[in-house]
Length: 84
Image (tube, rainbow, N blue to C red; front, side):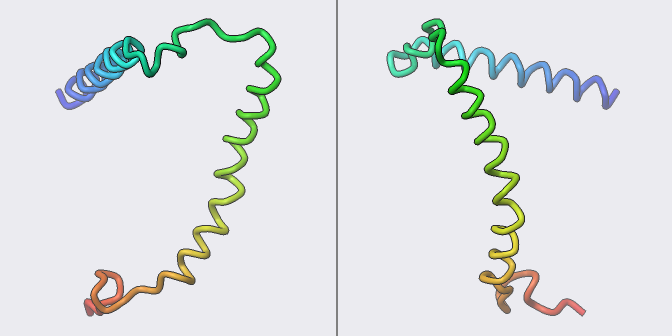
């Protein structure tokens, strides 16, 4: 029974997203997205795709380490207060 509820929730979420996109595309602000793509844009799009794939991969660990060093736990935070 639990799996059926999850499937139904997933289907509902997808339908909600598709409807939201349709409504947003009907707004004048997003009207340019309804136009067909430009033929010479494929090369630039590949560069954009590479950038969006590489940027998170290259910055995740350095920024994670920076956060660990710069944001030390305090007494008021749940990790900073001794529980044992």
